[in-house]
Structure formats: C-alpha cells, structure tokens
Image 1 (cartoon, rainbow, N blue to C red):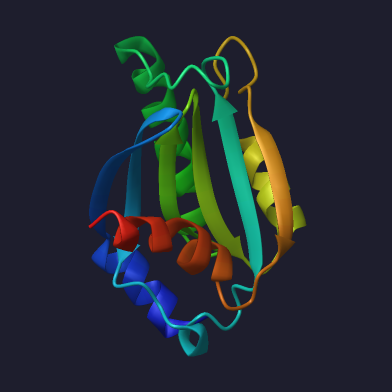
Image 2 (image 1 turned 45 degrees about the vertical axis):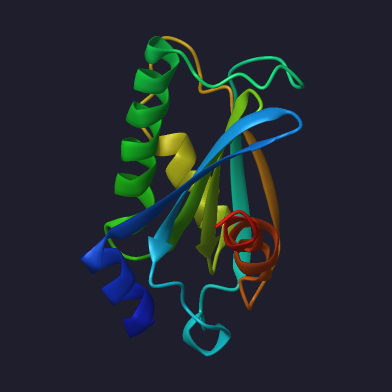
Length: 152
C-alpha cells in the first residue's frame, strides 16, 4: 500500500474549478495535493466511470434529482474502493450531460467486482467504464488539471 495515496485518502481535501466551454459549463472537483509521478506507485491503472444524465452537446448540468442519484453513487463508490485504499478517486468532472469519476487502481478486475457488489437502486446504474494503463497519472494532470490551470 502506497503511504502517499493512503494519506491523500485520509486527508480527503478537495479543490473545485468551474468554467465554460463551447459545449457549456463544467465543474471539476479534484483531490489535493496532486501527487507527483514518483508518489503514484502501485496505482498505475486508470479507470474512468461515466454516468450520462442528459444528451451530449446540450451543455446540461444535472437536475436536483439527478444530483441526488449521482451523490449517492459517488458515496457508494468511495465506500467500495477506498475503505482499504484499493483505489483512489482523484477527480470528478461534471460537464455536457455527464459526470465522470477518475479512479486510479492496481487491479481493474477487483474494481469491477466491487462495482457489481455495490448496492443498487431499482435500476442498475447507467454507467460506462473505460480502463487503461496510466502509471504517472497523465490523464489527471494533462487532460483535466491542465484545463484548470488554463482557466485560472
């Protein structure tokens, strides 16, 4: 277990960035401090979980009812992944009709098992999963946080 990641989880400090793109407003929440590549050892796989709640290209942010469902899912996700530091939720993006959770882990299959074991509501969660190797957390730094810095 990586002690820097464990500390990041226990401190649980989040920053917020908001802005507007051609497709509408966005909100980015991300854990701080952002760990450097030397501190991410053991969490080399990127898992993105996307919940579309409106049509693409509408620029829609979630309604109050949708927000309640997204928050409930996120709380369950954190409980499933972070109680033993198996995975770390590093950022949450809300934009253009979807919310995306950015998770780093060492084991996609275990994350899948934990997702399947999470409590469900009446319908299964309408989520899409994408996974790839990203040992230095480049997606977080170069795709997400770079936008935060550009719009600061």
